[in-house]
Length: 95
Image (tube, rainbow, N blue to C red; front, side):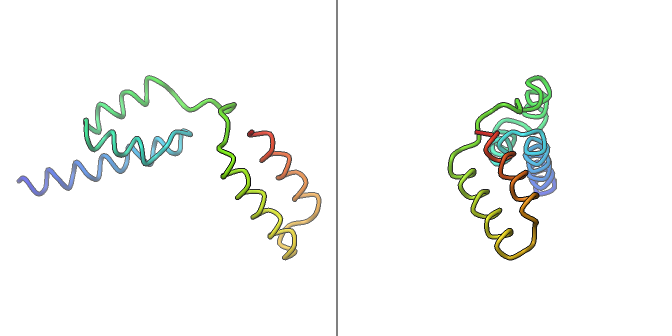
């Protein structure tokens, strides 16, 4: 009984983290909160605060990494120059 409860708790905490990530929140942070407090309580808190604001700033490291990946894709011919310019504008708009 105890092992099944622990496994269920871990699965639910993981699902809360995944759901938080899909709503724009930090998945790892919310998964940990769900693990420590309660998956149900963490889920209710996330439900109450709603999705992350789209205007929240993206950390500079993520922006640099995204731009580097886009440039590499353009150099390899995986995306066109127009697609590169459009995606670059999208990334820079998140700052």
